[in-house]
Length: 239
Image (cartoon, rainbow, N blue to C red):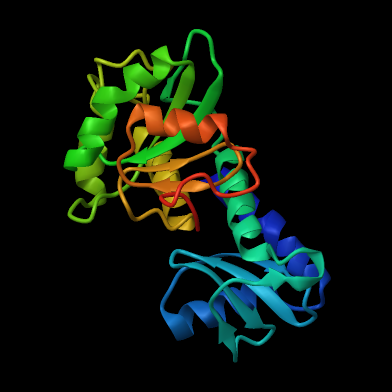
C-alpha cells in the first residue's frame, strides 16, 4: 500500500501549504458523511478544497462544515470543467502509483494502451476478458486491475486472483506472484476504491477519462483514436 499512501501524502501537501490541516479535514468529512476520503487538494476558490472520496469528488470548506457536490466550471476560460479535469488527473496519478507493472496484455505493435478494472465473475466482465486478444491484435495493450464485485469479499477475490492458473488463456506479461499476492491485490483494490470504480467492467483511458461498462473492441479503438478530440467522443465516457 506504500505507493497509494505516498500519492495521498503528495496530494495532501498542497492543502497543507494553504494553511489548513488536510488530515483533520479528511477525518472530519469521513466521520460526518461516512465515506472514505483519499485526497485533499486546493481549488482556485480561496477557502474551498477538493476532496477525493470513494463516492466521487466533493468540495468543502477548511473545517468540513459545508460541502458541495457537482461540477466546478471556470467561466473565465471557456467554461472549462475543472471537476472533470481533476477527475482525470487523479486517475492518472493513481495509475502512476501502481508500482511494479503486472498483468499487462501487451500488443506486439502497440498503438494505444488503457487500463481495465474488472471482476472475474460478472457476465460482462467475462465477455470483456474473452475479447481482450482482439484488442491486442488491433495494437492496444491492456493492463488488468482487480475490483471487488458487489457480492465478492476480499477472501474470495484473493482465492480467485491469486490462483496459479489465473487467466492462463491470456499471454499476460506477469501474473500475481504466489508470495505477497494478497498485499498486492489489496493495493490494487484500494486504487479502485480511491477512484470510485463501481460499474464493471470499467476502463481508464490514457488521458484519465473513465469509460463504464462493456465496450466492444471496435468502440474502444474508436475512443482511443479520437482521444484528443475537443468534445467527449462517447456518451458512455465521463466523470
